[in-house]
Image 1 (cartoon, rainbow, N blue to C red):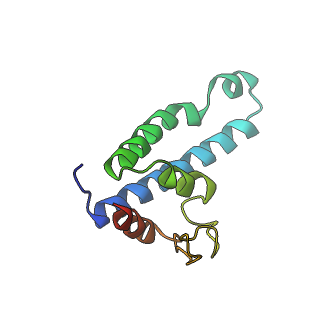
Image 2 (tube, rainbow, N blue to C red):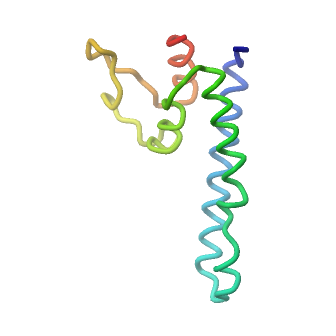
Image 3 (cartoon, rainbow, N blue to C red):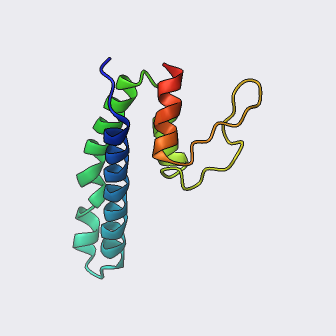
Length: 111
């Protein structure tokens, strides 16, 4: 599969994270709204989630990755919740996935 540059990968991850932050802000505004009709029928997540899923799926295909990218995005919240030891090699060596750059390097090394 075609390789994506490290810079482009980082740019995509940053855009996904920015979109997630915008979605969270919109959700907060909607939840704080006193107008039940708006709250019932408006959900920023439904407006943005399908694009996010498509981008993540494409990245997983490009890197022949089963679940590391989605785990890093959703469980580690774009690396913010990374802690040493949360992922290791079979020999116990710590794999640092604290940034998108390090995630990219790891994915490339696994190919």
